[in-house]
Length: 154
Image 1: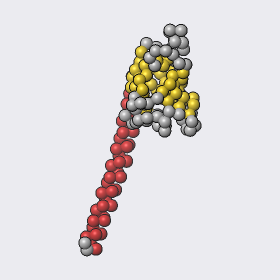
Image 2 (image 1 turned 60 degrees about the vertical axis):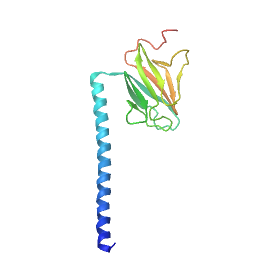
Image 3 (image 1 turned 90 degrees about the vertical axis):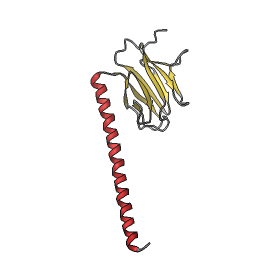
Image 4 (image 1 turned 90 degrees about the horizontal axis):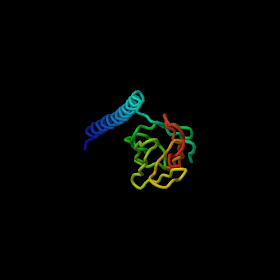
């Protein structure tokens, strides 16, 4: 290949790389904007039933962070999750949850581990004031319209 053609090919490769980098930045901005709009829409509609607050974190980076909880969805580190927690020990899709009367029914996904404190017999139900251990985090659940923080079976 002659030197002239090599320069043209190198210049073309630079422009292709620049266009690809611009596309990646644009796509990330668009996804972030969509997620923020969805979150704002859910807030306006009153679709959040409560929140989880990080009270324990192995790394100490997320301590005190608050995550709003919709009626049902997925908790994980993936962008497609309804509650996105960016933490090393949290899998892409860690837990699926759905609202039941006064609690959340949790279903671990893909072999993920989660523990509800205090421990109860029966299905994994998360009540107001309960702690959820997942990955290196401990989260406390708070429902917005909770009557009291007790298990109705007690």
